[in-house]
Image (cartoon, rainbow, N blue to C red; front, side, top):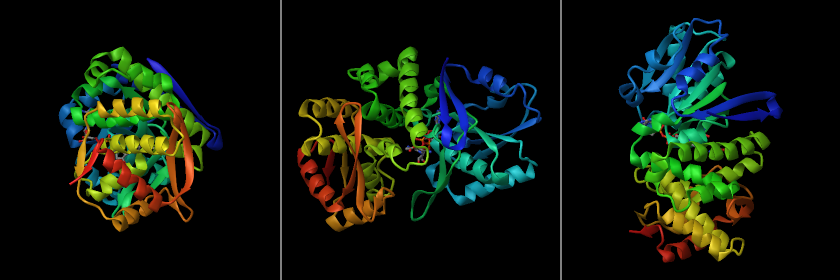
Length: 370
Ligand code: NAD
Ligand code: GLY
């Protein structure tokens, strides 16, 4: 088992991320050794509940009783109504300030349950048990929690760090292939922005090799989480450096919004977004051509090629400027100056991104217009 320590000096808070295979029950047992309450509160979704119906008996320490809330599965339930359901559940079951909530699921469950934990009785502790590759390397650590608003994704939320995050790769065995690729986008993103060794480890490997080699899988997730952990430690509230985690997300968010969240999984949009961001960096003279080609070939090998509906300049600018990374001064765009070297570019105009995008479309690489 591997352990990452996250130390947040700003709010005097530390926690650990445990990573391994079949570690969940023993790690949970350690966690609850000195826990004085009798019960814990579990939040999951209907898919996980169907796949792991014996979750409580298999993984929770015997001495504990559990109360379980099973939410419907889907991003469309990442709403205030669902958070309200969690509050009702906690009130009905008489949870108190010392209660611990466990979020068992992907990023949607982690984000909603973490947000509920941040507000219930002004904040109770919660444990993240992320079950998708995306949540294991990204949303399960770093403390961003939240829900969607009709005006935009993740518009409402809080920073609430978990008590612990337990990454058990065994859960990935049931994860659908498409979700695995989407999670891989965020995993390899951490290589592109900060860890060239992580990229080297995975370049020229196909995803089946990664899935079937448990040691490689754990090492890759560990290194990827390390990158996120160090970035979050340096800038928990995203006042500066944390923005590099948004590499590939400017075009990614545009693609998701433009296609009404129907055509892309988030990670799929990020794959194309990273390809575009690397291409942009090369075009602007920050990234040399050889590195761009290496990055592009790797992303191309993931097999995500999409055709999107036509878009006008005004539509593009409208969508891109709603994005959280837009301020009065322009877009904050994340580019690369090398593999493992991200740089923040401020005050990029949305018009210039539109012009660049036209040229990117001409390359016809991963994205085409219908
Ligand atoms: P998700 O939670 O919707 O999970 C994807 C699908 O996989 C769901 O149908 C889920 O039920 C299923 N699933 C989960 N684990 C499984 C398993 N082990 N076996 C089989 N099926 C399983 O999606 P996600 O990609 O994990 O997370 C996306 C969400 O995370 C978005 O809402 C996004 O905004 C959020 N996010 C948050 C952060 C953050 O820092 N908080 C970072 C990135 C993304
Ligand atoms: N997923 C980006 C962040 O956590 O900041």
